[in-house]
Image: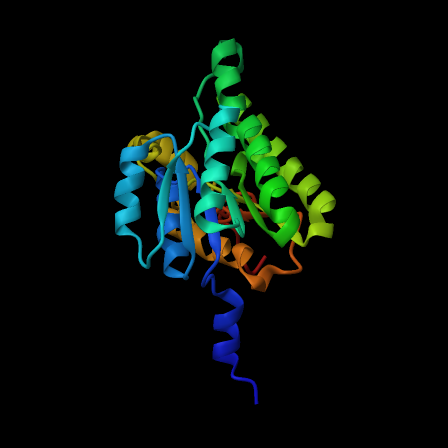
Amino acid sequence: MVNIGENLKKQFSLEGKIVLLTGAAGGIGSELAKGLAGAGAQMALADIKLEPLNKLVSELEGENHTGFELDICDMDSIDKVVADILERYGRIDVLINCAGINKREGYLDVEENTYDRIMNVNLKGLYFLTQKVVLESMMKTGGKIINMASHNSTGMLGGVSVYGATKSAVAALTRSMAIEWAKFNIQANAIAPGHILTALTQITWDTEHRAQYLRERISAERPGNPEELIGITILLASEASSYITGTLINVDGGALAGGKPWQFDTKY
């Protein structure tokens, strides 16, 4: 008789998996690092901010976690970090592209340097880091790629034209990765978080008229917490998702489903 509990544990376990997580010092990245380490992964954490990264490493459950200073906009930095990780761990089983930035400005106010910066971090860096990881490791060993897209990959708010464009492109790139690299036993998927409460978004939820506007557009009537992204990330990083590839999974409290319901008479 199959022990279902043990089978499920094996399916979702990340024991011994080498996970490269970019943007690891951020609000979402740091919670993912803690969750995946708790599931048994050995974390290679990458971020441009080395001091909070080293602090995070010391807080993780388990052993053999390392922080790497990465400038996602610099090709030499990408090459060095991938080489350093492979020297230390021998392979990369899971790549989680979580690095990302935004600047809220109207379309007519965006300047070229802002456009280039957001594009370089959110799209170009992701593109070439993923290419490097696949060429140097996953082509030989297979693996999982998880791209952090956004609610704005599909839905849109004012003032995020460049950010939304990058996240729509991330969703499209995920499909390309899935199609081209299935032959290497690589599964590529994207997660689209909705309105997640972090230090950077706290000001929005502290401003009552903005918070009310958002609550009315979220079925759950609240922001998500970063730890609510851990479960889907573990699924996509584990063997439980061996036949899931090329998809975009929304974790948005029902925002794209239509938001808060209107007052209706169930008796008609």
